[in-house]
Length: 516
Picture 1 (tube, rainbow, N blue to C red):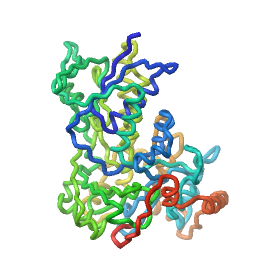
Picture 2: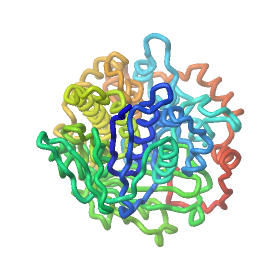
Picture 3: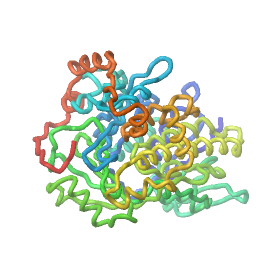
Picture 4: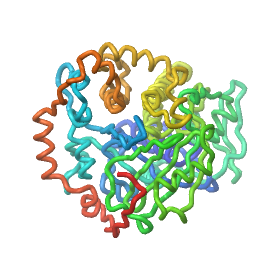
């Protein structure tokens, strides 16, 4: 039987997630239906600063039959139960949670409506979930010894993306994916405008039915060969650079390993704070139009403290947007070559995973490339647009006026029209499931509520409507009971990591400078 051939140009997270997933899901009765090869450059520097994920990543482990503990040990992983946003509403130490688990009623969800009519003295997230409290107490989302993927609350991982790529590479190669370490020197095109083959530095020529561009921002195939342009999102997301730093625990251990990603707003952007089992990765995402690289680095070091003075930093330039077509001719762009959105909601690996699975679902076994690529492009464009809108939501609701950056991001011209229409509609009624019809939606009405109410949406409106003497929010009894039970059962996150993964016990060097 002649198999269709796929060549993935580029390794890294994008290349090896794509290779391992497509190789696994495109088998029939245990037999492969496609031949997959990865051509990876041995010369491109690989630098990992830590990566945060969303719960969908566990689908990769389940699909590939990966043991969770082995995966976590191999990737320096810790648990992630959500994101804690600091100083996004004001610059006064305010914070709110976008956690992964919440109580969902069987019928109509009225929790948001009830909270809007309250005095908001208890954060909305605490009225519909135990998870913010678990994060504040730094409890693990799992019991020690609990079987993999059995979970009392939903979670994702903080992990070393470079090590994850290597881990998936070994699995993919072990299951039949061919790996070539070589550099692409020339691309041969057909008269019809398809890619015929890629030529390499070692003198090889590789033909395929489908080529996947995982070459990152270089976009060697989709842009440089096929000329597919870029939809720029910078009118809605201003940040275009990141100053990144690794903080080894041998240098500085803050006394705990958080089970939540910290996203702390600064003068012209924000800082991610991602804990692994051996270090933290921090990065200042900022707009070069509002702050210089030197000042951005100073803010990063001020955030971290004096112990960071000798630690090196690196500035990464990026452009927010997406490819006008992720699939053109017989080439599919996955990863950074297909688009990039700032990592505020940790969607980078999710977009790779989604593209790989959609490509497997829409693979042109019978040659109907045009019809399948059109549908794939629509689905992927929708994913980028959805995430763009959700990240834009975080910025447009701010009430900060302390810098030019925060004043500018909330101007009407920098709010997506479709998002503004939703915000206007949500002044009439709270978000609900019927507002989101796409079966692939990542951020549902529940996610939007956490950001809206974390950012005090319609606070003045409801005070004017119902008067200043509003009642405190109600925390349902079952939430309180569940929290009490879990508080007595769940171990500290650090203890779970020590016991289950063998994480060393680092001496605490906690000092002022890092906000938890």
